[in-house]
Length: 183
Length: 195
Image (cartoon, rainbow over all chains, first blue to last red; front, side, top):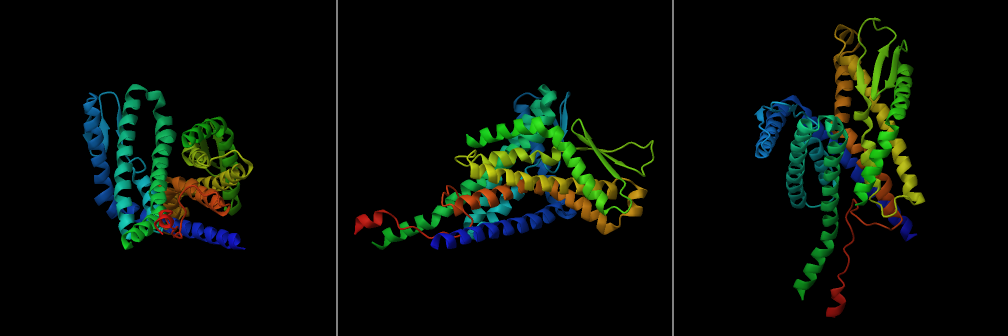
């Protein structure tokens, strides 16, 4: 009887999380895709990613120049567009973190750390894709569409699972800490 | 490690069956579109990783647009990687849940292709688009497909995995990761020793 109730509660929690996740994903997408936000935030942010990738590529003597969201070298050029700037993974991660039951302080910390980690992974992706495009152009399409895109999103999911599993253990740790202090 | 193995297995399966799957996807989306079209004019044909869009009322000499099928359904690889996180992904129950999730994911692929074709009709055929699609319809189809590209195709495998796999694991009491809800705090073991 009790296990049946627990099963129903577990199902309800899962469905509730997914409903909040889907709703937040739509809201965040509408915000990010709107023209004012895209022009004022997303495009300059993407140009920042291109500049950072240009700096890293030049450290490896790739002799690149950056103009806006485009990275060029004498033999290869890429334009970083929406879908390649890590924002899609950040949307997924942000929606999941905000939908998960935790304090706002923990959510904001998770969002900040997760967003930073996703951008570091995405920078590795942009740099490696440019290198592949320059030195192994036959592999560029598959690496761009399937491998790196899936890998970055999976990293975002793993970051969320790591954060969520820590949050789940938090009440138990807090209780243990309180008990010790009372003694 | 399991995630990487699942990713590799999913990638191999996807590469092997992507071509035949494109044909099934094209046929399913074509059927869906033609059932709601007044003149049933849409024809979708898949070949060499591309889904070619044709219409019975297109001028014979005009070029036919092609859509990359892989962009729609490579998220199957993500689904494989996520389900591989289970300790025994090939045992009957998780494996069955995986195929249920794959079937539901296939439905999202059909819906995405319908949105993509309609977005093409609504926004990329010049005067023909303006004559047949109003402002709301253009935004609906184009916005819906853009949402799939930016967020939906990544969210779908995650949501299906969470719904079918995580919830299933929780219900059978073999939970090994986070669950979406407040938990009952457990008493620390050390408490007994202090008494």
